[in-house]
Image (cartoon, rainbow, N blue to C red):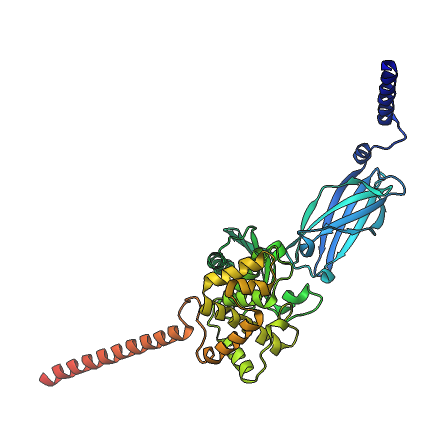
Length: 424
């Protein structure tokens, strides 16, 4: 019996050894070592797309070349696979040349957004070789971009002086500090702030022109904003930069929430702007007086496309946050965000934080508006330099002072001279 068992063990070991030595069974490691990826290049064809190229040596016949990529929309999750790469022939030494055109407008890919990608070879129902993962940043290479960095923030702009970038960075730093305190969290990833100086440039990469002057892409911690050549650009920057940064904080708080509430997100973003909020006051007063207020149930996921409705939705959302802050206090608002951020539905989050259903909240909110709209909302504007009118007035007064000084002085001289002459 012992000899029989020993014989069985010997046969099993021999079969196992042959399985490693049998040249008829391809080894995935050796196959991958024989396939070489080289000269991977990327070219921005802004604003329409990105061209990716690669050379592949040693690719088996009947195999296929795949291109895998991910961008901001699926940055935290899966890879897209393009199975239809373009054959551009061969190099002089017999390596295959492949190309992929990624059309970015349909993907809604903003400038300075990263694209992760890699090439692979597929054969016999599996990937037999894969190149390293690259990261490319999509942008308009036709501009000479400038940047300033500090405290995890990077501002990109072009065709403006360094002071312009410094102004925006200063506002962004203050907004991040203030909102870290407001949301009681710190942003976990560096932030990129891209500034465009014309509508054509701002909307050029988008498939359709929208109404927003700023956009946030929280998945990749990127914001874009339009800041045109107007004189008082700092007033707009104080609105749009903190607004878009708030979306990054909200996204981080709601990391476990798949259905983020639009009016809550936009209300918090508007609440964290640095301005007097008189525009929101005038818009909601008009909507309230005309009986056109929108139910929050209709503002959960979208504000629509009608300009009046969009403005009213933003104003209502801002006033909803103002109501919660003034009536229940900031700690209760944080409790709502914490509960909703864990993944709880908005209804149950409201009940736990405020003891109100959403219908009860809306009824109380509208009753509160009846008296709250009699006075303007809090002014959260930043102190700025004196108005140009102040400088003009000062200059006028200075000129008048000089004029009167010379006039009075001249009069005194004339009187003195005349008096001396009369005495003589």
